[in-house]
Image (cartoon, rainbow, N blue to C red):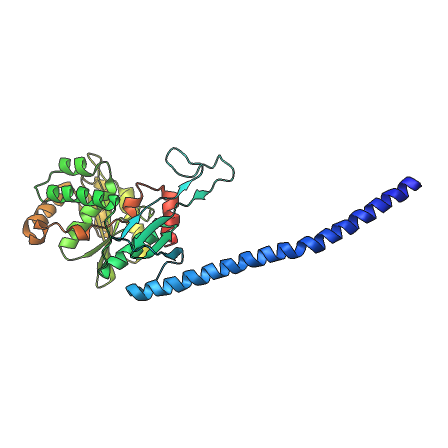
Length: 326
């Protein structure tokens, strides 16, 4: 009996002590949370104010939501940027997500833009590059990065190479390791004959590689295949025809460095798909490059990093996320 009463007494004292501790500690916890939230609100308010200030100073309509701006006392001697790329904490050999590991997540590496007395950080490198291009369009000088210089040098070599008379073997040797560059090669040919040519991002698998536009309307869809000896078969033509339904394109063009099977040619004739094989591609290239005086001038400022270039540094699954969140 006495033991039970003692236990009740101890339990009562413990509950009283617990209440006292809650009464004492709760205000401190609440105060800590309140101060933290106020600091967060002030940080957001400051960031929004700096965004507005930055946008007004540089006449920009939009500053990405994921950008964080700081005002620094230091005024940088030159404007420059630093690219860092997100990656999976646990990744496969090809850098994509490793589903065998629990709690896998993306490690977001911030990229930075240093401009005058502002420091901008972006968790999405594509958003950073978009901001840089809009600033450069306002005649703001921003030093080219290693990645830009590397692409400029590579494109200059291609430019010099493309202005020579090419053969199919030349094209295979030049673009075989990176077929997406062949898509740009074809796009440049169409640009030279008066189209606006837009190369689709590498995450797209819609059955075509290039959109040809006239007066901002889709004129044609183009599929490009860098094949050595393998002929393009009917299924690939069918895939392009299927894409035309989604994009509502009336004209379809299929370009290859090889040739087309008899079944592919018959199907293309029936569905009004224009076929350009390797022989005709070389003739078209020679006519474009020989007759276009603009091809004698290489414009470094026209070379921009795009989503195809970022595919070298980020896996496709993360690249798709970055592209959707721009």
